[in-house]
Image (cartoon, rainbow, N blue to C red; front, side):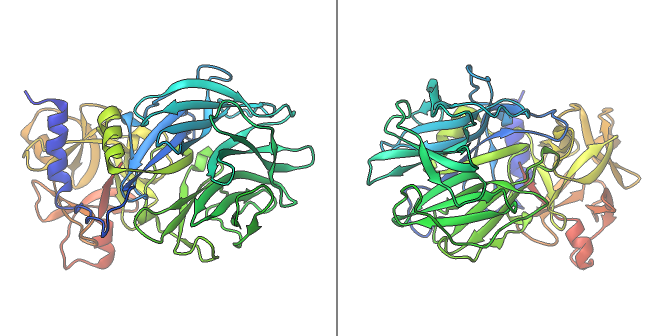
Length: 460
């Protein structure tokens, strides 16, 4: 009898091969060829909240595969016994340290002088867990990040705090993330700021931050990275109704930079991204949601470059998800989910999050096709009935098997995406109409709107 891993591999071969081409090899070899993301989780109704360390990996820096089934890889055991806002720092010796806010849940403790810290050789295990004391002020220590200062030969740990006048960024310098130097103001532009993120690049230092005065994100530059030497470069950036937690990333493959942010409210916990070819300029362009996908329920993340070997080791250690999601091509903020047994497109985030997670297995009627089993209602599959798609329990009949089997092919609107042809109505394909999924007779000669309605991305 095949194992679950064998079944999954077979399903993915049939579902993905025609739709997701392999990435071309990099034009030149790079020390770093992938990325790791760390995050905690929140969902609108708290059903998927997790105040612990989560990891995801990516080869392109935009589309992310959560590890360990999107479950935690480490959990604090002291302080509040929860974390928010994790950050991964690569040490000069190639190993890692993980920092995080000592805070659990959505009720904020304003007076916490500590942060969580772990050591790790390669992020496949974590050791040396400790709470590190940063200051004695009656204030918080939120969203710690760090960077290496070559002039000092030390790491600067930057975090949000209130200095008695307003919200600023503080910094403590350290060599071992245990013995912390004295706290000092790192960035105080004369108004309240939150969530600092430092990117050393090209001999300079770039600081992304949120202004609490207007709610926008900004990028500032310093030639030295020393405290109080930053000058803001950009106009305010915002997508969505509210945004926070900027992440500034340099691409591994060229002169491309990304600025990430996520929405403030868990009820609308959406990641947004911008791209630029000049981190020192003011030319950030918002990216289309078609181009990137963050992990389910991820909040306030950190992103670090890693090697291809490190990425492979992380996947070997923690494993990738057994489930997939289906993103709409022309409504890329929406995903296929079941609700009251009806298959539909709903905006992300949604409750419960597992409604949008599907376990692809070899087609019930034809193993070269794919059937989609519900993760939270195992034994139930996406099938068509009277040309409308719904979720039903497998009754073991040949008709059910045929109704629940689909064949992946190059997307009708974009060949790098996927369209799904019905097994027993081969001239019909899955499409959405009024946000409800159905089968329609579609082909290359169908309207542009219809072809886009029938195009999806197989993602995580």
